[in-house]
Amino acid sequence: MEKQQNLLMSRRFLPMFLTQFFGALNDNVYKQTLLLVITYGIIQHASANVSTLNNLAALLFITPYFIFSATAGQIADKYERSKLVRMIKVIEMIIMAIASIGFMTGSLWLLLLALFGMGIHSTFFGPIKYAILPDILKPNELMSGNALFQTGTSLAILFGMILGGAIISISHEHLIWVCVTVLSIAVLGYFSSRFILKQRTSEPDLKIDWNFFRTSWQTIQYAKNIPVIFLILLGNSWYWFYGASYLTQIPELTHRYLYASENVVSLLLTFFSVGIGVGSMLCRKIGGSELNMKMVPIGAIGLTIFAFYLAWGMSIVPHHTQILGVADVFRQGLAYYHVMLAIILLGISGGFYIVPLYALMQAYSPRSHRARVIAANNIFNAIFMVASALFSILILSVLKIDMKWLFCLTAIFSAFFCIWLLRRLNPLLNTSHNALED
Image (cartoon, rainbow, N blue to C red):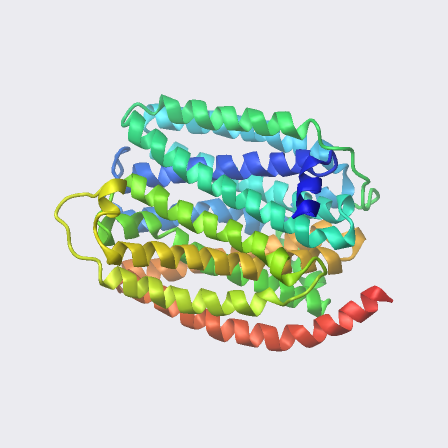
C-alpha cells in the first residue's frame, strides 16, 4: 500500500493516472447519460427496441477498436507519447462539443455519432497509456501500477455512473448540464496531460502503414507468433466479452426486472465499480508485488459462481407496479440485497482476474512492439465485445430469451474458457518467466 501511495505522489505516474482517470470518467458519464436517455425515453427515438438500441450503442463505441487499433499502435511506437496524449485530449474536447449539440437538439443520431467518435478517441489513447506504464515503472511496480490504473478506472466508472444518473435525474429534459459536465471533464483531461513527462520513442524509424485492415492482420499475426502473449490477450479479451454482456444490460435489468429508476442503475454500476476497485487493490496485496497468476483462477471461479447468484437473485425479486427509487430499493427486503451483493462480488472477481493479466501483457511484450501488442489486445477486445453485443442481441431480441439465461449462459462459457486458458497459459508463463530472468 505504501508503494502504491508513493506512485500516486510521483511526477512520473500521477499525470498519466489523472489523464487516464478523466478520460474514463468522461467515457462513462457520456455513455451512461446516453443509455439513460434511450432507456427512459428522454430523447425520442423510432420504434426500435430499447435493448437493441443499447446494444447498438455498445457496438458503435467498440467498432473503432477493431478498425483503427493497429494504426494506433504503430503511431504510439513511432512518435513521442506525451505529445500524442495531448493531441488526443484536444480531439476529445471537439467530440464532446458535437455530443453537446446532440443533447441540445435532441438528435439521437448525432449522439451516436459522438459515441463513435469517443470510441475512436479511446482506440488511439489505449496503446499509449498501457505502453507508457512499463517505461515509467520498475518491474516490481507493474502490479501496483496496474492495480492503481484499474482502481482509478473503477472509480472513474463509479463517479461517472453516479454523475451521469444524477445529472439526468436533476435536469430532466434540460440537458444543458450534461453538456457542461462532459465538456468540463474533457478540459480537465487535457490540463492533466500537460504534465506528463516526455517519453522515449520506441521505434522512430517505423513506417506507418495506413491500410487499416492489412495492419490489423499483421498486428494480430505478430501477437499470434508469441504464444504466451497470444494467450494473455485472449484472456484479457474474454473479460471484455464477459463484462460487456453484463454491464450493457444493467439499465434494462434495473427497469424491467427490478422495477427501479435510473438512480438505481447508477447504484448498481457503482457497486460493480467498487467491486472491481476492491478486487484490484486486494489482488496486489494478496498475490504479492511480483508478476504472477495466483489470483486469476480465483477471479475466474468467481465470475462463474456469482453470475448464477445474480440470476437467482433476479428471479426472486417481487413484481412492483410503480418505479422504485434508491431508498425504496433498500426497503424491499433480501431479494434486492442478493442482486446488489452478486454485482459487488462479480466486480471483485473481475479485479482478481484482469490485473495480473494486464501486468503480464506489459512485462512480456517486446519493448520495440509494446504499443502494437497492446493494439492487438484492443483488436481482440473489440472482436470479443462485438461478439458480446451480437450474442446479447440474439438472445434477448431475436430469440427473446429471458435475461437471466443470458447471464447463466455467459457464466457457463466463462468456466470452460478459463479452464482451457489456464491449462495452456501456466506452462508457457513458467518457461517465459525463466527466460525473462535470464
